[in-house]
Structures are given as structure tokens and as C-alpha cells.
Figure (cartoon, rainbow, N blue to C red):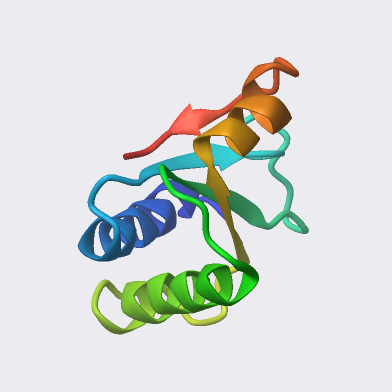
Length: 104
């Protein structure tokens, strides 16, 4: 789990390849300093458009595959990718005062 930042940067590179205007954040236990050996790394991709469920799943899969294949993310690394539009991200994290770390 000590390599979380390197792993998230690989995901962020993949995101920028596919959605150049998207922003990438780390949330949850990692952002709050509660990282344990049982933790996964929660990554939120913030996009400025609405996606339907099929588009969200396709983008999530494309980002993951690209991060693994092109940037060397270990295929079994415990990372959880979430995709939100800006309004949803603001409502769920910012307005509730949740800690977030911007990666890209």
C-alpha cells in the first residue's frame, strides 16, 4: 500500500489520455490518512458531462486497462475507480467537508 501515489498517478495518466479535461482525486481512507493493509485506494474521476451507466462502466474499464497495459499498474492493485460529474462530486465530497487530494 505504500505505493499508492505511484499507482494513482498511473491511473491519472490513463484518464488524461481518454478524458483530457477530467480531474482525478483520491478520497476515503487514503485522503484522510487512514490507510491500512486492508484498504483500497478510492479514485474519483470528475468529468464535466453526464454519463449514462454504460458510459461510466466503459470509461472505468478503459482507464483501468490503459493504466495496467500502458503505465504498469499492477492488475491486482486494490484500486476502486469512481466516475462523477462536477455537481455530484461537489455534493458528495466538497459540501460535506470530506478530505480530497487532487492528483490531476
